[in-house]
Image 1: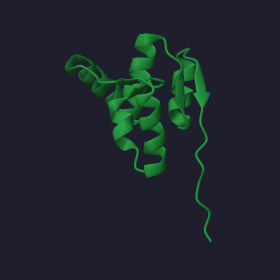
Image 2: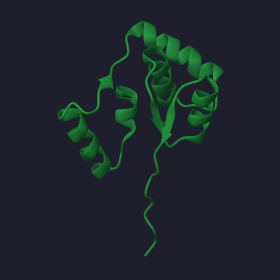
Image 3: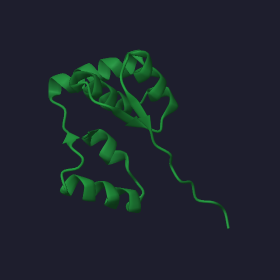
Length: 98
């Protein structure tokens, strides 16, 4: 599960292409928040200043759906784990200077 806010943040073309493939094959569901949910996410983002709005959107929906949260963000991981959510990490490959 991902949110449309997270998908919009993906800037690297090769990552977006892979994500798009997972979506097309129905291996990844993208959730679009209702206005009521966006308001709740905004309130959460104001309370949790260490998390971005996109992070809060995933955290919110993971809580709502009792879903596993997948993140590479340490702040989001700590918050989700402290609230009892199951969290799995991802590692980003960084380009090395030539």
